Image (cartoon, rainbow, N blue to C red; front, side, top):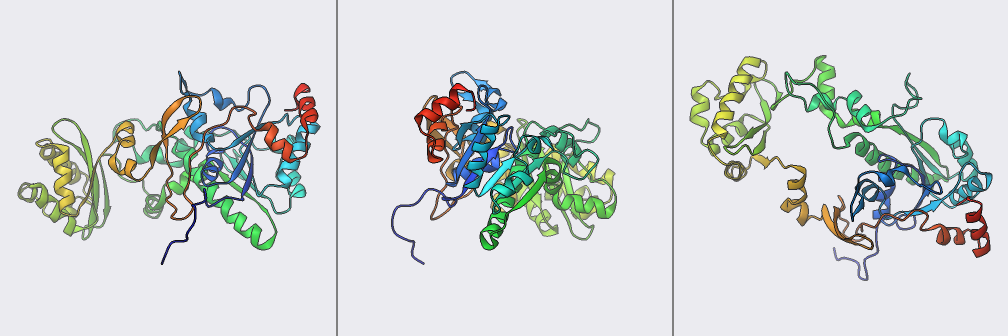
Amino acid sequence: MSQPHGPLPHGALQGVRVVSCSTAQAGTVPWMLMADLGADVIKIEPPGGGDPSRNMTVLPGKGSTFFETNNRGVKSVTLNLKSAEGRDILHKLVARADIFGQNFRPGAADKNGFGWDDLRKVNPKLVYVSISGYGTKGPHADLPGTDSMAQALGGIAEAYSMPGQKMRTGIVSVADETCAFLAFGGALAALTHARTTGIGQKVDLSLLGGQIRLMGWTLTTAMWRDRNPVTGQARVTGTRQRAGISASFNDRDGKPLVFQLVGPEDWTDAMTALGFHEKVAAAGFEQLGAIVDDDAKRAELLALLDTLFATGCRDDWVARLRAADIVAAPINTLLEASNDLDVLANGYVTEVEHPRHGRLKVHGSPWQFSRTPARPGIAPELGEHNQSVLEELGYDAAALADLRARKII
């Protein structure tokens, strides 16, 4: 089928309007992603200091890595929501919006005039997305939440733990980011319904809920078996008759790699490609199923493979496995990941020309649209869009000056 002619528009979400009273990460990333895709996103910040995350991880000459990553492409409007006039302006913006997002501590939005019951009266078609730490119904619903809290409760600390070592949360904000992705999808699902029926709704989600979803089928297996999974160097799956394995090993220089096998045929092909088959068979491991229910056998096989992989270099091992159509890859550090050939070729990491900080390496887009490509933007200065946004609401220069003088904006 031929492609449509004409210039490519920016983003599949052009025409979608979002207003966000959000901070931190889970509450801002959904709307940043929408801005990448062409949505008109207005971020509400308090006058004076703005979103506290503007001051997180500020690198000399490059600004805040945290704020830039999570708020690029959005517009910044300052409003004192403790004032009646500030809330009135917010309501005017919401009346024109499709989606509203907030991730304040439960109850805070209602106290400040932008709870669901307030805003649904302003705009019956509004999709209202609320993010909390624990969810709205449990014994800890009123507590504040963070990424580490959700990682701790949601199971990922065990998922990446090593036997005999302390479980710990990780440095990458997987709970925040997972929740953000779910908020993005949930908002668009509710928007589809609103545009079909003319009726908006509230979408509640939480850091904890997102982390539980991230545990996927491994959590299902643990629940059905009623026991925790075996953790560490290898993930062994399946049954004695049809076993699979995902395992990591270091080469002779200490560089790690991983390979994953889904069945007995893969095991034979992988060991043959690596030149290990004769040795593993001699040790009693011609069939991988021998280690499924036997901890001692599992440890013995992994120790043997540790020794064998330590005789060569990572690039060669990975090349051999891939040539045999076995899934294998080097285990990248974050910096290695940012320079990975596939990451760069697909634009998952890209560069932008920042007006204040020059050329910077940034996240690209995880999506590739054939007709409406995404485009990363720049995080706004505090209140940068006060004039342009409020002028659209009918405020003239004198009114804006008055609002500034009285610290409403």
